[in-house]
Image (cartoon, rainbow, N blue to C red; front, side, top):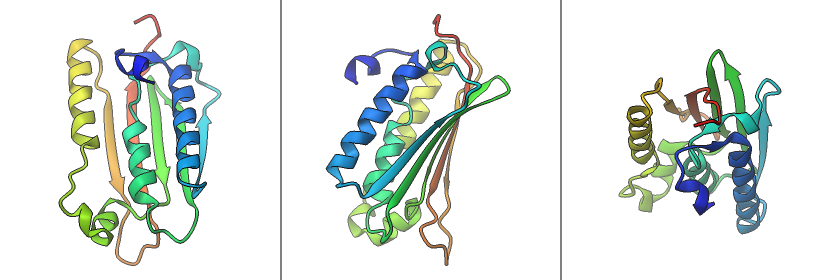
Length: 166
């Protein structure tokens, strides 16, 4: 994992392997309290697409560590890789309690500031500047709402399709 993290880009196929290994370790660690599914569009050729390594890992970690904490049902994590125009779209979806609810339910979280979002923003700004590329963008949607039961969180990345020649 760590050798990949020092690179600017790795093949999507390598990223998929890393994410699968990470999720398998987390399932053992958390006694299978969640299930996961990774869906890759047949329109993609993962070995030919370049992606910043470990881009979604902090958000997967947040889903497992915080989103599934205290839910009464089995956690569901879905990761989708698809093509939309000239972009690789990545979605990380969970049925956890959502970011806002996680903070409300866990008093220790009130003073905790997640670094996943600011670090990811900073990292993407550096990559966008350094490679003078179309903007890599991401958005976090907290589906928490009064009355919602385990609404979850949605993370969405839009990455220009980059050939692995970089």
